[in-house]
Length: 136
Image: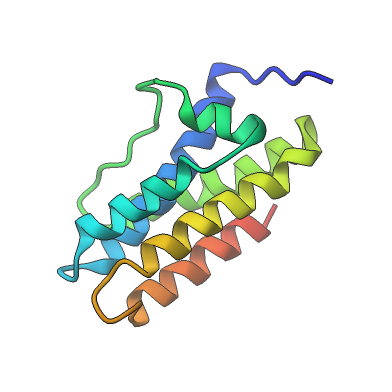
């Protein structure tokens, strides 16, 4: 069965996945945020299946990942993570776990990129991201 996602669905998935990496970068603070973002983004390129195709598409349709604080970013990204899993459970159930594991691999890669391993802020952000993925 072939699944066709709308442009809005694809934007939600991209916002969630790349937003999770952005949240990890924000949580890294002054401790290598660029390395955290780079490692997390590289990990997203390893996605396969429908999720991999959506994340690999050359598109500017990633939702707003800017903001003045991690809280503003989290207000958009955490609901997008939950919505993405719910969307995939409905439209492509076999891809819901793929999306979840892809995001968690990216989060793990991002957390490991900081100097001295993940600190409390990265650990806390990982728990928030995991909670949002599991809330669907």
